[in-house]
Image (cartoon, rainbow over all chains, first blue to last red; front, side, top):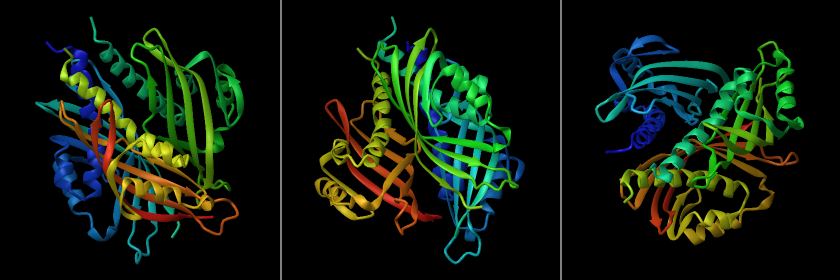
Length: 143
Length: 143
Length: 143
């Protein structure tokens, strides 16, 4: 029989990947890949208000492609998980670089974000059931 | 009997949380929470000189509340810990955003920091016994 | 006999250290320490083109010392490793601060980087066999 601490450590590694997978997916504007990280019955509270996950994903798909690109640089999440638990909490700091095309009149943006995620085990994977996404601060980068 | 590598892995996870807990505590100006991460008999060498931990915490409490807010965005620490060891070393890169209120004449600050921590096991927890905090560089963000 | 998951977890910790060791080594301009992270038979695709590892290291050694200092602030790598595997893939986001001396006419640089590393086990250590280093974006920090 496997030591429960071993299962806990494996789960922690899986949980640690979630925010990094989110960063790659959102920066690639691959909204299907973003969706695979969330429980479709879950919800997101964020800068665009409170949404069920399908509406949140639709909102991401509707963002104009001309807005430039982004890079989500994340710190290591604080992970709370009991040994043997099926629910976890993640607390992740992020700095988001919003990069405008050279011809854009808009300045690049720099955002300080914090993601508080309730995550639950679904068979072999962990899915975000509830995300509270808080913009701590925002600044413009000089042109 | 538990495999010693299993205990080592569990310790590494506990150690990894220390810098992230420090970031949340200092950004919330929760100096009691900062204090719970340090050995009260320990010391800190930092930008405000060398102090025993209680004096270091008093110095943090004395910082003027008007100075705005901060966000400590930390990289993953390099963790040195022997299997079975009770002392560890952490080497953590950080970028600190010092955000002034809109009415402040001061520009926002951007600091490159490196924390070198000697950490020791105290029963079930790990505490920072000695921190050497180095400011590698500092810049102002444009208004 | 050791549980293979235990070995996997230990390997993941070793792999996680690689990008952080790279950051310390390159920021200290310790090119020998950079070299110890790479397979000498490997290669690097980067901003200065495609090179075998020895030529890549020679290129780093040839950089002018007057260029100032750097800080490589890295996110947690996404690590792909099969249980029992001897090859891994790392995907690491980084923001590089290129800091010029005060007297320099050049502005400080801010670079968004992504390192995609193929890593292989060599006895007790993991070495980067192939790195694809992509500059996602670059901006200047104001003087």
